[in-house]
Amino acid sequence: MSDEYFIDLIQRAMSELSPEHMAELEHVQILIQDEPTAEQAEKLKLRGDQLLLGLFEGVPRTQRSGYESGLAGDTITIFKHPIMQITHGDERKLYEQIKRTVWHEIAHYFGLSHDEMDQRQRA
Image 1 (cartoon, rainbow, N blue to C red):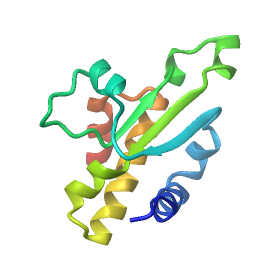
Image 2: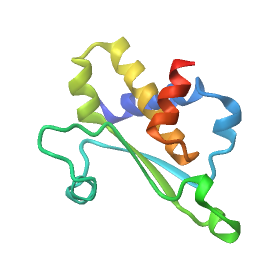
Image 3: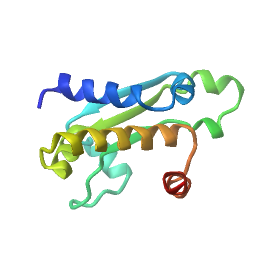
Image 4: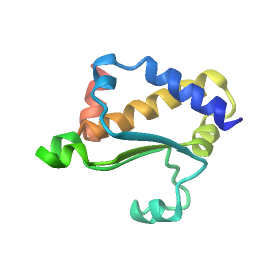
């Protein structure tokens, strides 16, 4: 799968997320990488059998104050190969996983914990 097509799927997924939340994303760079870097894997203490689908790196909005909020330079990275691995080439599952991963990382940007995300998904 080409990077361009993968990016198109990410953009499509983002267009389906809450417009209010998307409008509040400030200074967030969204990237794709094939796999996490060695530094990212080490920082997260990933074991060899663990897959990382996405990663938010930065300061969550709930932890910011004043001047710092405009200079955070936050990054969301979506990892192409792990997502493709777990969706087994199924186009529908691929898109749904991308959408779920993008939402998950944006939720981290807004300061939501995994427990809070689980509660919102069940509601």
